[in-house]
Length: 101
Image (cartoon, rainbow, N blue to C red):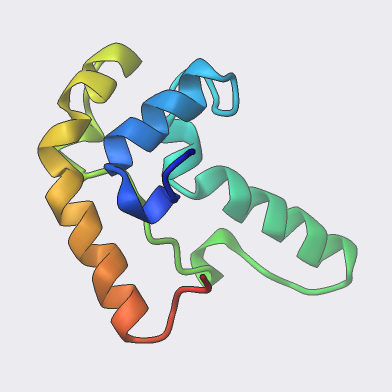
């Protein structure tokens, strides 16, 4: 029986996704939200909208102190230090009705 994602530590889920090949070699590329933002810009422009990257609000899931880690492995090693912070953000979002279950 597998646990629901919300019952597991963020760092554990990220590491599992990386090991399964679901993330970029450096998961920060996915967790920063910038890749998705760029794709939204492309789709919006193809639809005729005049949209710039600065028009999109991006909430990165990469903890600020880990944005400048030199290596992806260092990022993954230190990510558990921020599990409680990420859990709090999730719980706050759930309480505000911003999470679909």
